[in-house]
Image (cartoon, rainbow, N blue to C red; front, top):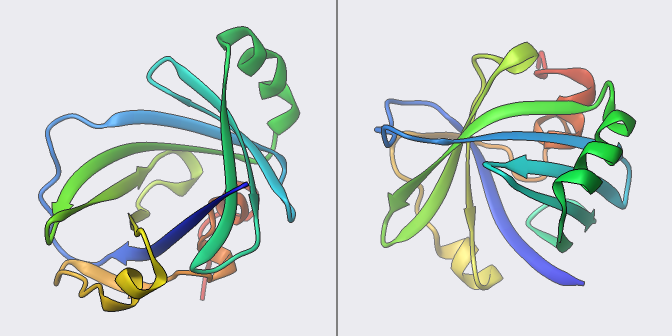
Length: 152
């Protein structure tokens, strides 16, 4: 299993998004630990297993066919997320801004992946990044998919 090192923030200010984003639908087959999800992004379909929580997580993602995605999709009823994903430049690296739709409309998050924990610790978020929600269960996609936007 690979490792994902990622920090997640709410979008708090005005960020300039590219004119085109990629529509994403993802659903959770098993929203626990490990979490198992299927995702469709612009004709590309994957199944992903993630373990742990917080800054460093285990992650394995495998491409699947459209037919396999369609067969698995019904198992995700009640645990789905719709969003548009935009890639933006931040301080010489890339971040992804997710603008949620459906029941999660109005929520915007930004995630930055890193090659090391040291790089993650040294990252200075731009002014438009809001509160950091790395490891906050309520802002994990698997939780959002089942329970909606946290009311805290």
